[in-house]
Amino acid sequence: MPSLRDLRGTPALPILIGASLMLSLAMGLRQSFGLFMAPAVADLGMAVADYTLAIAVQNLAWGLLQPWSGALVARFGYRPVMLGGTLAYVLGLVVMATASSKYGIWLGAGVLIGLALACTTSSIAMGVAARPVPAALRSSIMGLVSAAGSLGALFSAPLGQALTAGWGWRAGVLGFVLVALAMIPAALVAGRVDRVPMPATRGEAGSAGDALRLAMRSPAYLVMAGAFFICGLQLVFLTTHLPSYLAICGMDPMLSAQALAVIGGFNVLGSLFFGWAGGRWSKPALLGGIYLCRSVALGLYFVMPPTPFGTLVFAAVMGFLWLGVAPLTAGIVVGLFGLRWQPMLSGIAFTSHQIGSFLGAYGGGLLFDALGSYDLAWKLGVGMGLVAGTVQLLAALPGRPGVGRPAVA
Image 1 (cartoon, rainbow, N blue to C red):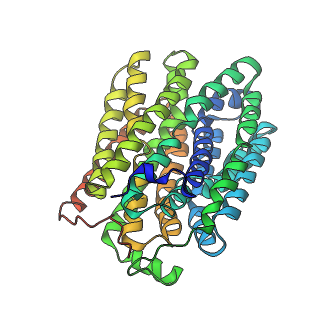
Image 2 (image 1 turned 135 degrees about the vertical axis):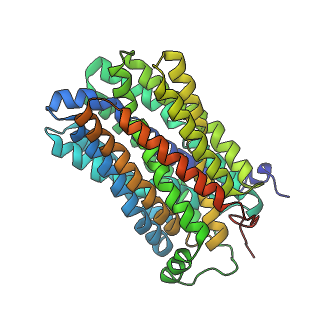
């Protein structure tokens, strides 16, 4: 059986490093946008819901554009799509940093960053990671790349908080611009994957339309995509509103950055574990377990008064359960439909995730503005998460060990 050591000295290694760096920076920066909410709202005279609408638009644009970026990859290759995404990321941050009203925030942090994420994050990075490696290593490698995607929050959240505290939120965003520029060479190197021949896959659809029709007739795919909606709702509610919630509770502002950094750190462990576990056990069952455990953790945290220690423990638990879904969902799609259509079909499932993200960000802001607290928002998130996790787990019960396992000829 191949091992990770077999990749040393091969063309696959720089490709994987480039994809990991691109994903790490793209995810780390966008996960830290909640740090700018309070100062930007005060500076621009916006309501909380105005800022959270930008994050909601970002997530919705990301989800709606993800299938299209996947289809463009199938036609033109990864490199032009990833490069276009990195340039959109830099432009979006510049527009956000120079915004004079909520409209600039909506365009920069919303539309442009959403477009950028559709071209640089998990669905694309998982496709890059899966192509140049043996099938036996695929799940573990996708877990490694997903783990690298967690590292960006370790430095981006403290960097953004420090710059904002010292020179204002605009300085924090401009600091992110400099970091985002490093995504350009990373995308160039990762784009070498276009030179790697596509492995043959049994039963692979011949066209995008055929692949879509197969997906819409697959119960395993439809359940995964539906549960993905609640995944997005919970996670983006947390990254967007946790800083505000802690500020309301009188916590030190740096605790928000520390919590986001801890989430990023434990993301690494979770991604590695679930990438490894997905190669050995049922991927749908592991997904269901993640959703159930997340919901329990959310409920326990919000039902008790927050403390610095409790917040960091909660962040560690959520971090471990965070990006572990990426190698599992990508692995399910590859196993069901093959490598060629993985970016597109993962992107379609991700659209469901991002509609949930839209509701998590904007709905959380609306409920807070209307009720003056996050009580109803977190209760709804926990309840829906328990339902989604149960359905996903039940869908795995009939015992199909081949679900989510690659069938490469």
